[in-house]
Length: 157
Image: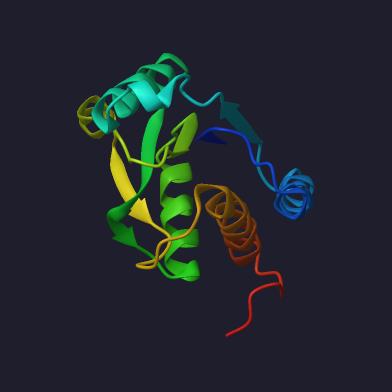
């Protein structure tokens, strides 16, 4: 299985980019992983939140394959512990899913079309974080899940 993370907008904080890159390199030893950053919607001052969500959704949906298993990182999604997330990924691998795509949307969330297309919704926390920080948190949790599945000592109980 391949895992892809699609995000809206770039991460402009160098310390976050450095952290993301550390975990991207580590993940290469466990699973194919790709991070795709889509450009922000232009002229947002002239657009409503719904229009922005719609435009972002169209960009994201254009990047998906029909067979992709789509997971929206959404505040209303299901919460997992790190071990539960690892088991969840393991189950998806056993189901022969070719590509699992996780999406971090823009500041207003997702369009209705995105919710209709997704296979599930997941949250990393009940707290609110910047979309840029969530990228680092997700990549670290993905790495943690891989080390849990391999029985490596990165995760402590």
